[in-house]
Length: 565
Image (cartoon, rainbow, N blue to C red; front, side, top):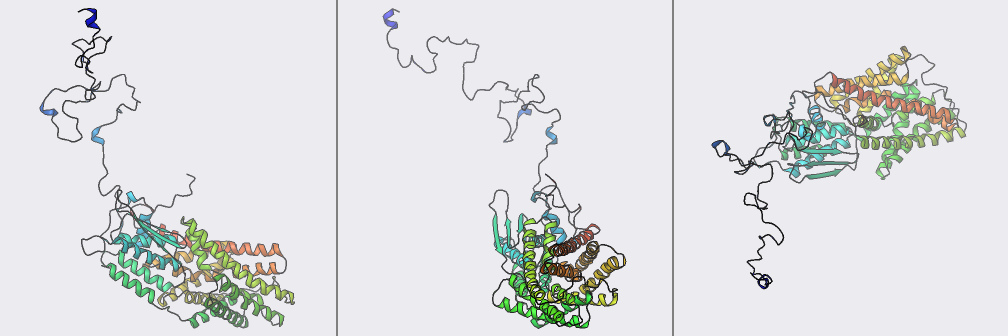
């Protein structure tokens, strides 16, 4: 071939893309010249054909591929090496029902079973229990969520703690087949979310609590409804549950308005006798409390907030006490004013707020305690206004005229006064008539414990109050378990004799007489007594759970939210 022929342009066939370009040597015949992406990578070998290599698994390697062993020089700690302790036979898979298996006993109240499951992660909860439905179409998710929200609204409006409200909502959802649900309760907002599976969108519903009214009869009826819904032997359909809930809402209060006014007078009069007053003091305190109650009802009818209602209700007892002092009557004006304060102190909201804080619901606890603070400030403003004008008019209000401090205690009279105070408190809370006797006796026992420790044992009043409140919480929890009901109706009225009315009065009187340090000392003592009551009630309830079965094979898990991690 001549040089001219070499310079001629080559044809397309001669310039094929698979031909090596000029200056590149062609590979030898014994070397692989393919660079296809389908070629076997380094480290893979073709196994020998045989019956043992046949597989039909979709996760198996295609025919002709086999995983070659890792090279011996690969370090053991490498991410690409198989650990020495690994074996395919040790691999486990999560069963469809979830792990681990937790069994709940059926002979305990539903509150304990639901509270136990609420403190578990969703993946660790036991298998769903038999549901309350009578067809195969599945649960009506929106209606079940709405029913649980309406039940939670009544419980929260009645003063129930946030943990018990969540337990009731979860019991309703779980009884109707909604196992993967999460209720959430704050001070005025209820929410519940249900997710059928990990790949489905969650369904969320919420409801706002606008009004609160202490009606423990309605509270007990709602608890009975939840107990029937969560019972396997009682078939309660959604329609029947809605009907019973509507009846509970329409039911009238068990006591009329005039009975509540008389109960407020009995409460104030009993409290005045409890701190050393006589018959005249009893009548004066009762009249002042009834006038304050009527004025509060008048303000409520005009749409005034509760802050102003408490302010107005605190003025008549203080005014009557100051008037008796100006008239030089031989009575203890301090006992009259203290009796009026007993009828106004928000013990129910205080116990519920501290209970929410101790169980981990800090937002709800903060809101409840802030509400108690506002009510207390309203009472302070009403009493301080009257005391200030009384001091300016020359009323000789002596703080050293202690309430029963210098006089020898009268145990029989004080026990009778404590029983009357608890009875009046239970009527004001609209309790069931069948529970009034037990609550009254519980309040009498609380005062006996307090009197034995404070008057006889000369123990600190704060410690005596805490122990007496613990007895109230313990007995209240036992009675609630006996009746499968809420413990709140059995404890709130029974702590009435322990409320810090006298310490509050002496603190306000010291501020009115420009003795701020002494006044703040008395108010600090009142706050300490109030906290002792709330913590004692909650501690008594928890102690009862330590010695009773709580519904799970394991111990009830506490809320691990403040352990430092």
